Length: 126
Image (cartoon, rainbow, N blue to C red; front, side):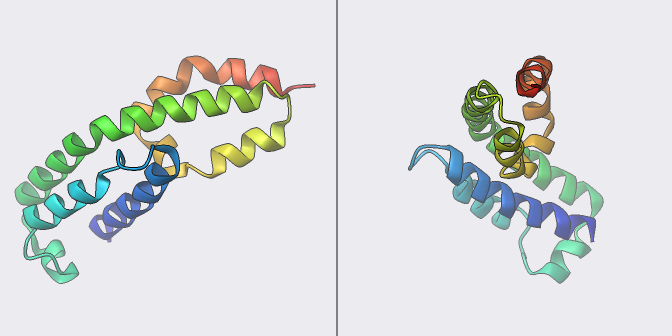
């Protein structure tokens, strides 16, 4: 179940990247295609039967392939969040945050946005 959730999370992350990144730069599909090849045979039964080492190797490649897009998406999201928080409307900030749960849950984004959290929260208080 955990492996399936990882794949589903990647699918949702793909949609979040597509909403943030300029057209043509969100090449997560190529990363997912490569992941498909690394995990071959790729049906769900086979994914669950991969050895722990094979699964770990595949996910390491996926994570490395996502790093550039994740960094770009995080920078764009950071600018959007700071801009929205400056409007001092908490509902707008919350709405923006709710659009990107998978990106915000990733360690790179969480670490990159940590210094801005207190600024954004203080800006939304009335």
